[in-house]
Length: 214
Ligand SMILES: C[S@@+](CC[C@H](N)C(=O)[O-])C[C@H]1O[C@@H](n2cnc3c(N)ncnc32)[C@H](O)[C@@H]1O
Ligand code: SF4
Image 1 (cartoon, rainbow, N blue to C red):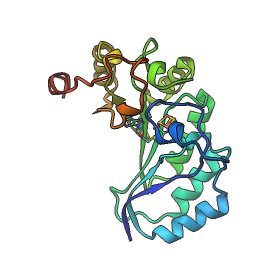
Image 2: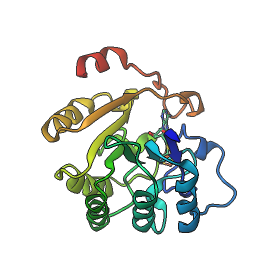
Image 3: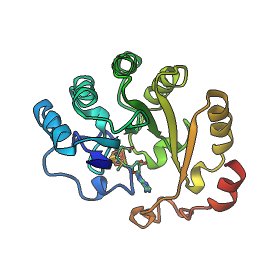
């Protein structure tokens, strides 16, 4: 029986975030977990309370058959109770609106699970790409346009605080209030990996601001 588990379905990622282990220790070869192995993993987990589809070495939405993979997980993994969740965690700079509509359809067909989608987005258009190297705001905006205006999946916004994105928190706060989204403020655990010359002011100033917002 699994309570909190993580399933990493791919080692591919489109970004090169400065503090991520993947950027600092890149995999020699990238690959997707096969649909058969995903099905097998569900059997190995057994009844599960909360599953996170995320990881350390990739972004789940890079899996080339993500929609099929998600459906297999929903159908083969056994929820412990009616509060059991499956959470996707993604930089959300990968897929278009049509993909998100298909994902919502699969969630709708699998209501024996609670579905959570977590945006890993650290800023707004002018700041997110500073840490999230290669992120395309247009893609993120497209994803948010679909995901913020639906009520099938619970949406969370995970925001790592840096000096360069502090000011954007006020705008983010208005958005999360408007759309009833959960905000998760996080500090950066690996700021030492980030070249000091790139972020001379990398020290996180989160205490005052997070208390003010939450
Ligand atoms: C390694 S990522 C993998 C999943 C996905 N690619 C993503 O970015 O959400 C897992 C989590 O690590 C977080 N993360 C990345 N860099 C971090 C940092 N410097 N400090 C704290 N958390 C970080 C991400 O925001 C994400 O929530
Ligand atoms: S998007 Fe996620 S996995 Fe990819 S480099 Fe950034 S933190 Fe690492």
